[in-house]
Length: 402
Image 1 (cartoon, rainbow, N blue to C red):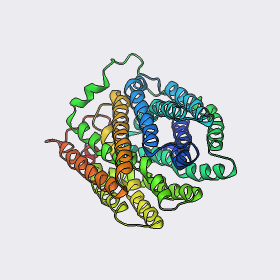
Image 2: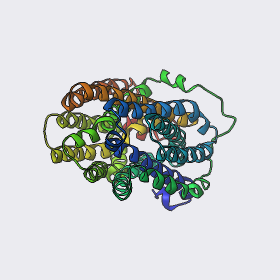
Image 3: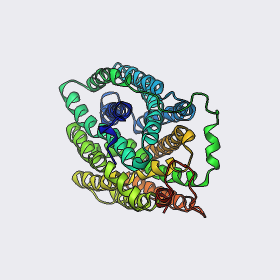
Image 4: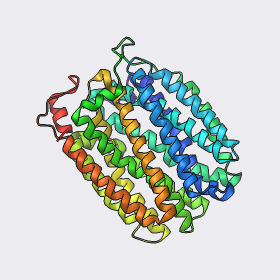
């Protein structure tokens, strides 16, 4: 099969890849600077966790309310509005001098991501069903690549100026992506498609299982965003070490995501994601067992290797669980489930870290991940392997659920 980015699909897919890349880089600046918020503005661990939580919550609202519109041909509008709102959010945080500025700014940015993400996923999914795994892996690679680039740039800009500098620079950089957003074209979705509520999708058993598997991944993400940088700071890391550590921790994911999608499609997304995420769950528990700054970074990098190989399989399971006309709604529901899991984990991890230590945080996170994976495994094994989406070959559908 040909690469969608090398044929006529390029004008349709590339803008979505690039916008998610830029917005992920902007979001990573917030996470990278949480230690600076604590030292420069006097935020407590709980207040930092609350800021992260608000971003997840606003993203949840956007994903639930806006994603069905992408199924009705409005993906480009969602992409453009999400990018504009993200720029405003970064500038808002750049002038912030109190907790409420960052709560509002993080909330606006979360809403922006909730607008753009399902639009991007839907377009990529319906572009070429024969290369579903490859395309979703590529989208994930661009998305996470923003996380790889962002922390290093943020740390450098913070060193050259102050903690406000990265927000100004990231916001200006996103302005240069506006022409790219205006090149996005709608897919073949019909504007008059029947309006259905996203929550109706919860009636699909195997979709519920796929959502639980995705939740396991984002329970870890929420705990990671809320605690990991603070723990690096506690173990003596400087700001540049935090930036480099975040970059190294995220680097394997974009490098391996496309390959992971291909392997999941070849060997079975259900089996593949359970195996890789189970290994991640064990590694997460080890974060709090072994001491030392370098040890924590190395363990996180190893965990990221399996994340990169495994995480494209989750959206694949979601995609093949619903018909084409419900793709954006399903991906939006998946995104809402992800951010709900991340929001829950971020605030709980912050409270646990404030009252105990990182060992309790990581072991608790690991246990929750394993429980979610077990129930996800059970629900994604239906009594039959009948295809839901007629545009995906039966053999491929069957492999994905094996």
